[in-house]
Length: 217
Image (cartoon, rainbow, N blue to C red; front, side, top):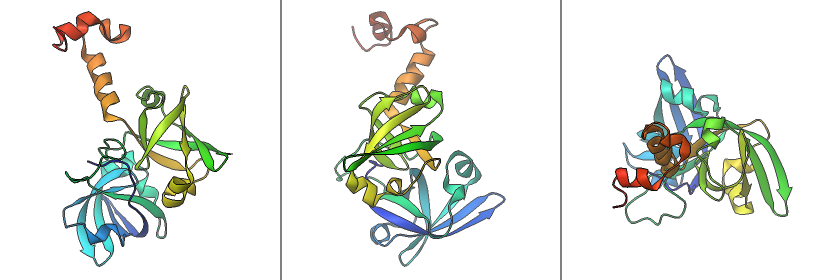
């Protein structure tokens, strides 16, 4: 479990691909200080397990499924990645609840300067955009951001200077891939609506459906 607040920009040391997945090595001076073998780290939005620690370098095994469903397979030595260690019980929840399970890979459509900030449009499958709400939360490459505009197959977010300086999104250009995760609350609501009696899912939540499900008496 994570919050979407990036602790550190790590540097990829190596990515060794194999028939069954890959081995990723990341230089992480800050995160490596408080991490243990077997701990979880969000690597640009994807939750991975620390399988080796060599000084300030952390190593992770990546499954074939994770390579297929994220942008991690395209990493090269020297690339920067957003790092966040798993949330601890005593930590403040400064962003939003992030699972580290990437839903889809989107692409940056455009970046427009608005004062000191950047407005970024991200193209994503329509099914993913349907899970978002204006002013709601979305995770982009592991960063907790607020949805500004909802389009048919895209959405926009605004990046403040601090986020631009301290995460990868500040240096990414148009067409760059980004790992996307919708707010888990929205996914549960969508799942519920898809499972209710025929006709109710399309018509929305009704007082009758809430009563039948035990939410009200």
